[in-house]
Length: 487
Image (cartoon, rainbow, N blue to C red; front, side, top):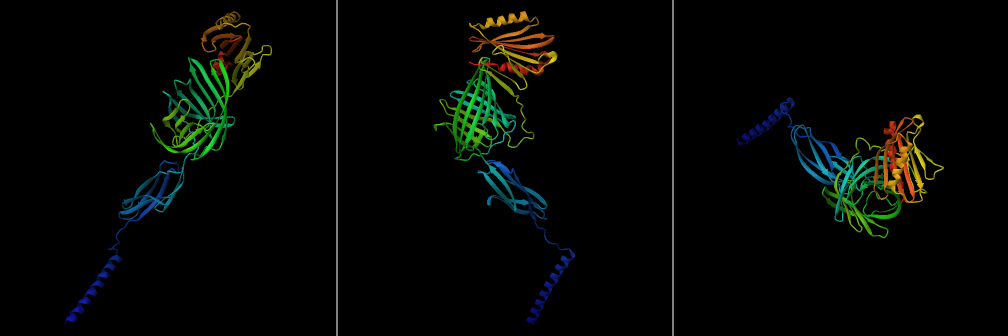
């Protein structure tokens, strides 16, 4: 009895299982019972930006995490850099949605970096100490401390020009200094070394124009770029300079040599931030330290510079504005008119004139020259200038000479009209006269310089046809301003 009941129960349980499985199979086949939804995670659209950076600058690595499944899923996003785990993020991605994830990588040494995320890979390159590219509008301002004095100097990239067949940067500077007469100027900088090949400085002292032009012949042994700790190079150069103080022109020549060594890397703190810099030490011919500079890739120049001498001079960055990428428009080409220099050493003066103008020597009067443009209306020159140098036995008084010249001119030229007469009280005083006249009914606008040096009288007279004054007046004025007397 008991066995029968047990047998019946076993059969009943077996039949129930068979029936249950059949029902489930029926429901699956009929579509009534379906599989539960699950998450499907995919990683796509890996972006590495930028692909080339300076050491210490950030790189952003981003990707899209997409869930194509029907339920929310968890995903562990792990970024590796050169095979090492950089960072891991735990994400919860909703069903049928896309979630972006980004990581920031800051390379601290130069080289190629390979990043990987979710089976996708990318590359970026970090560089340092490289030769920077300068762009129009790049601007730097430095506070300059010299002894107890403080001043400010600013540099701005203005464009490019061609000198002796080479394209160079044109960098303008302005200087606010109580100790230096030069308050503005331009440097023409070699694009391959960033050393100037020519510089022009100008300013005023007691309302007298002073200027300086320096042409540099440079020889570099070794390569400064890229900057690498322990790298050393030597720069030897000669400078041919022309300085002016009013009418007095002096020429000079000097030679120098310096050795530069990249001593290491240092963090420099300034009023405008902290900078990772290469420290470059400057030595003179005897091996003495005469300067040091801290160069930053981020600003393309020195953050700090020290000049060692009788008085320590320190340049420290006060502000800057530079571009890391090329602008939409290239650097403007600056047209610098070519001029011809004429130095009459026998008579003791120098003058320059634009390319295309002519110069003729007076065969009868030593020291007298004529400079003029092409022939203009009614056989007259459009612009004309002549320099006369007269030797005198006795020293003359400048005021008396100027008065005699005026009186003689008024007697011989009935159309002469004096506009102004100014005596410039410089080291070598001179009179500057402005006047109007006419010749064969052609109106003229003119300027005359009268100076006496020892037993020599210098008279520079230039005029331009009034109808062409807009076209040639400034060029003629430039020729007159270029006149200088050797000390």
